[in-house]
Length: 101
Image (tube, rainbow, N blue to C red; front, top):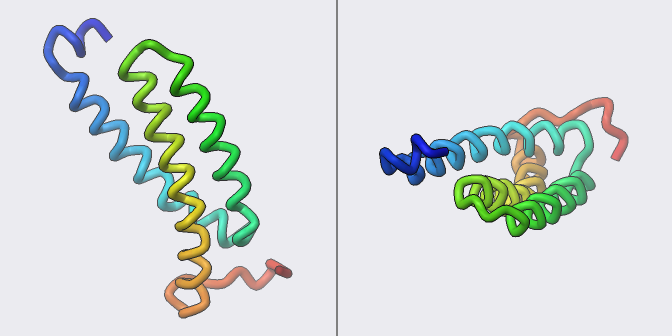
C-alpha cells in the first residue's frame, strides 16, 4: 500500500480492480441465470449488502473502494440477471435444458 501511495498509483490500482471485478461479474451473471434462473437475484442482493457493510468497515481507501465496487457490481447484477433472461428468451444465449423453472 505504501508503494501505491508513494508513486501515486492508488487510482490506477482502483481502476484495475474495477476492470477485473466487472470482468468477473459478466460471466457470473450468465452462469447464475443459466443454472439458477432469475431467482439468483437474491444471491447478488445479499452479496451486495455484505460488500456494502465491509466497505464501510475499512479506513483504507483502496480496500474500502474495492468493496464498494464489489457491492454496486453485485447490485447492478440484479438488473443484469433479468436482462440476461430476456437475452435467453430472444435466443441470443443458450437455455439450460435441465432447468425446470
